[in-house]
Length: 145
Image 1: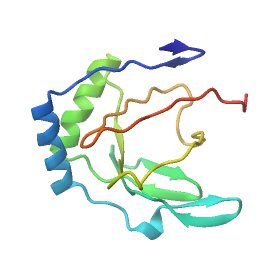
Image 2: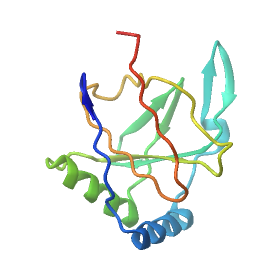
Image 3: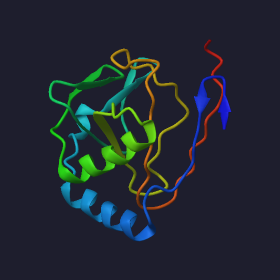
Image 4: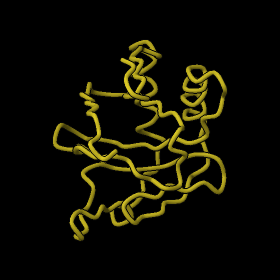
């Protein structure tokens, strides 16, 4: 799919066996932020997010969303492996950050939204890897522009 600056390439990067092994390692190794650090503001009211969140990457990077600024944790070997795959896709090797959202079941989710993080280059690429159960991701045209 390639439309109006949205280029979606769907492919399998890891075999089922590799993906299962990566998922198990992520389950053991990832340290998530406390829930009070990952709330969102909707219509001026603060709510907990229905998922676990963590961020790993280069030193001194932060992730800011909905009034929260989260520090980046140092990359661990399993995340370096995933970044290498992402950088193969991008071909310029510039990915240096991983945001992890862990959804425990179909009740954990992220609703329709538009990312508006001011500390992120609006022309940067995003690669999404999904491990564990299958999930549906829907892209919709934004009416904000």
